[in-house]
Length: 409
Image 1: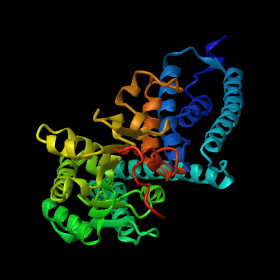
Image 2: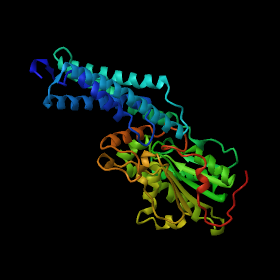
Image 3: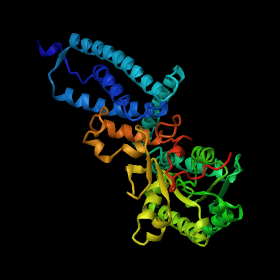
Image 4: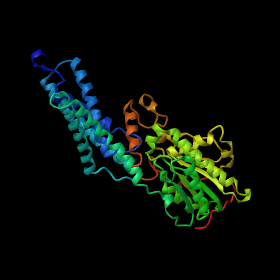
């Protein structure tokens, strides 16, 4: 084979043809949850970029190929891409069917491809502007790029604040008691907790057989499904009280101010304990502490603090839903709810290099990146999967006395 008839594999069309099926396979590799269309577009661009760099570096030190060999590589790449696309579509649709989601539609595929094209175009535009900074200010490029990235965070935070469909501010259809205090009620955690318990007391919450202290997520959200389920189980003989301690989404509060969540949870628990302990022992309701997501982490930390002995003695049972990292307290009558596909519970940083113990498909680094995408999309799934927990969960709440009252509907 003469040197004149050879060409390196690093030619764009050959390297791209072989990199595309690898990138597609990595972008659609099975994870905790079905990949969402926008996330698929992002993963495609990320995977393709890495695959192209790797393919061209390998080609630069590899043997030269003839023109016919290059054509064969392109044909092979096309065939592999078609096969991987079929396998990915089949696998993703099976995952979606398992949790009650519709199959991927042409619109979903279009959204994924459109997202990928927008990202590629934006990346090339930024690179061009950076290289031509004589004509375009470097500061302007950095500002526009940063503004585009930061747009999502305020939008997310605003959504959490304005879509506050706070179930505890609505009237119970079965006559149960609901009480809530938000950030607008007071700036201080202790004062806000006092207001929440005052509202609970004024509504007759301390006269009910069961008192649920709900530690909310970072934005102050209380799961309406759990409230509805508990009221279905206990009827009017249940009261639920909660207090907002932050306005940011849970993942932001978890990363930036986890201690603030614990402080808020402790303030509410202390105020509830004070109110309950003022009643004759025979008239005290069973106190149940319920926490979801960051609320579970905060509630667990508040109850296991060295000086929380009185709190632990006053609590009948605890219920933790979707605890980040799968934490628990070990206290009596503790119940955990953890969907098998909830990345908030099961994902670990070690997934980057070590397979999980759950027997799920795994690839180094790839599975870790997918877990991050799953965390972002963990609420974009039906109840009972991902990080969403349904109205059936309160049926598992443990009570302290056999034959405890179930209330009346």
